[in-house]
Image (tube, rainbow, N blue to C red; front, side, top):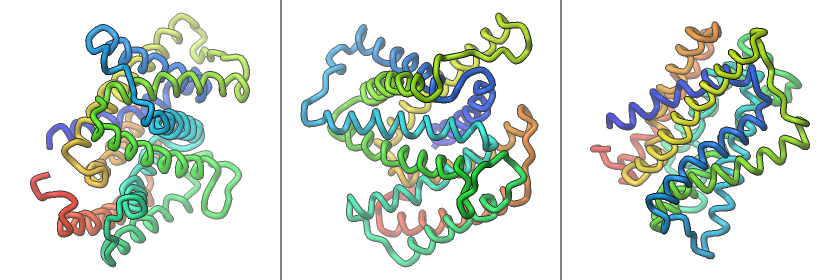
Amino acid sequence: MFLVALLYALIAGTFTIGKLVLQYFNPIFFIGLRMILGGSLLLGYLYFFKRSNLFIKKKNIFDFASIILFHIFFAFVAEFWALKYLSSSKVCLFYNLSPFIAAIFSYVWFSERMTIKKFFGLALGFCAFLPVLIDRTTDSSCNAVGFFSWPELAMLFSVVSATYGWIVVKKLGKQGYSMITVNGIGMFFGGILSIGVSFFIEGIPSFRAISGDVSTDIAISMGYTFLLIFLANVVFYNLYGFLLRKYTATFLSFAGFLTPIIAAFYGWIFLGETIRSSFFLTIAFVFVGLYIFYQEELRQGYITAKN
């Protein structure tokens, strides 16, 4: 359980770091750079120490393509584009939708039984986001569509893509692939795809010096980049993949409930972001919805109390 708590304490910081690094890079180009570097580290480790793990079976090519597209490219490009406009805590809060989306996927693909309590928990969790969606004072949202702005819709798409990606990761893990192999291949080729798309959408890559001292800004931005790669691409992805062998995806999503609270604290300290009452109201109702859902998971035996 300590590893689960550590996992989310670390990942909360990546939203703050991501917000800081976007001062220097365009989002799609940065995702490409970050994923190529992170993937290269993982694949380099396999090449020198476990070369046999670099090979994949023909029957799993579609699954690895899904990892590249949904687990990496769609999820991260949408998230970091949204991060330009939304507060780091609000972006992090969207990931609390993960267990609800995972439950829908599990119901459709794995025939996990949906009870009335589960349905109520899902509905309560989704409705809990309405106060934050209605509140437009904490970020620079643009082009609203109903309650949703385009950045919020992008985050919703990101969470759906990431959740589907983790289900495919778990599937490949059960088939004997190491998490380093899955994440390394996904990151490296997802990064190449992001770089290619960046040229068409963002143009020639550029670096923004915000302090006037280019060399200092380059050093700071690369420091943020490598810290983000270490925490998210190396530690989080592989530790999460390891924990998926012991816990259900729904439980791990439930355990991440504290992440947006920690991210909000980081954002307040390091970014000067305002935390409004609507944020905590959403946190409270999401927690209730998740708790109801979690208790049903326990009762049905999909997870065990010792987890």
